[in-house]
Length: 92
Image 1 (cartoon, rainbow, N blue to C red):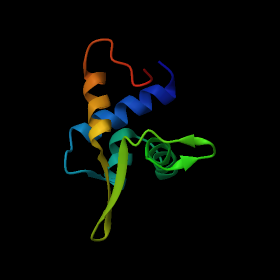
Image 2 (cartoon, helix red, strand yellow; image 1 turned 120 degrees about the vertical axis):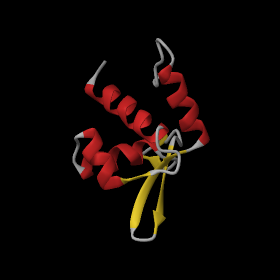
Image 3 (cartoon, rainbow, N blue to C red; image 1 turned 180 degrees about the vertical axis):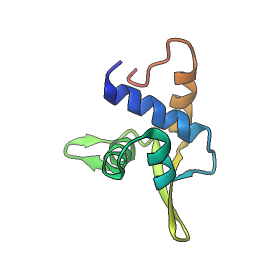
């Protein structure tokens, strides 16, 4: 498993455990990554276009007062559940 795949799996697992979302600073701390890395990863996993590629729409960020939360979408939750299965792979 590459570092990117490991980060993807860890991120989806953390968010699956927090159905109401998780603040970005807390997510950084739990994953042991910098905010810039988290923001790039969330952009990649969201539903925005990056270049010619449409994002998969697995993650959404929402404002909650002064906090920004990351939450899984329904499709993201399905991917996270498939990762929890033996032999699960988010790149399928």
